[in-house]
Length: 531
Image 1 (cartoon, rainbow, N blue to C red):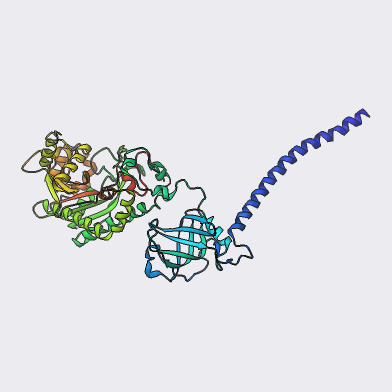
Image 2: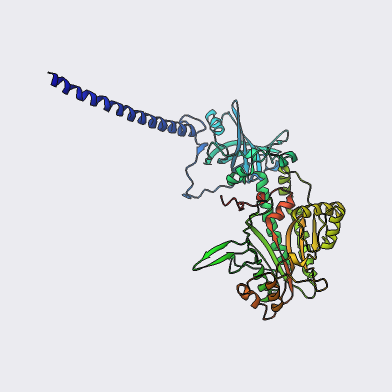
């Protein structure tokens, strides 16, 4: 009997163990079912109820996979104006913000840097569930809206389209954004005061912006910055093309350092090594030797400089040009100077809206320049700095603080944010720079400045192969590695000069921004290689 009792207790213990396991499984299944029901509930909320009289006018669109053609004309937000009043339009944009008040929902739609207010109000055509659906759409979602355009009694100051609003008839989610955003567009768009620029309390810090660059680029100021940057490239191309220049494309993988220095990125190249080009310098000159006469190029430039400053990048866009001349390198200097003044004027005329959009977030004094541009010799700059208490040696280059101080002195004396500094000391220029024949310690070289910072470095190049070899040896350049470059001048080459421009710096300084990372879409510096 005891044995039977013991035997009967064993299953009981097993049953108890099984019960615990079962409980755990049931809890897991319950949680899973709960999540499934919650998901179903959300889907149900997102879709119109069966008896909703606005059914078919709102909801989540199926994923667009190019299944069918839809013949529908879309209007751009920037084109909405009082003349559009009374029209019914379709708009695809982002839901910037939404605000539900009673039986109404106010939605701000954004398309690039342009915004317009849209309203849904419960009436015979718009149901309460439809208004609720609109109010629950997550910020930054892409939506299709059909609406009637109407004028407003008083201007809507929070929108770019101040004189009209939209009376929504349909609203469909094309692509939903995550409910929790790493940064809010309205925070990232907030105007920056001088105190905020100089202090630590910036609304959205730089690293947060750059870590989430796709979101950050959606702000009105950033939309304007990169459209204006495209404008600089376009004007550069158009102006030089009109002046008889030919656009060329030069190698970015090269056998020797372009500038003869150590600040190059070495890359594995099959069984050997190569370098990423510091500039297209050598190839521009070879193109001149090949009788192209006037050339320019727009492309990536790489600098392995461990400089974590407001104006340095390890990869940037170079706008480079080279030009043959007849007797004096100032023939080239005049062309480059005029190119800049034409470009500045073109930006004023064609990109006024973009300039205003940037200034709204980053207030700054408008860029001013002279035409023809101001030209000073290095000795004159040295004298200006000496009057301000800064002493420079005969062969010293300008430091960054010297450049900024000189920029302020020039602005005060000549009222220009752009000027050319000519006749630099020979000792501070690259090996291919032509020395001044009248002053042995001076060179036929120049830099150009915007708001006190250098944006172009250039010079007359040495076109004689023997003299070029001599100067390369003085600078410690390995002759074997640039033999093809030197050889190109042994077949006759016209005298020539040119310069290299940093695109991001030009845009940064034209707009008066404080950091070059604001003008690089996905910046690369010693600490950042993503995103």
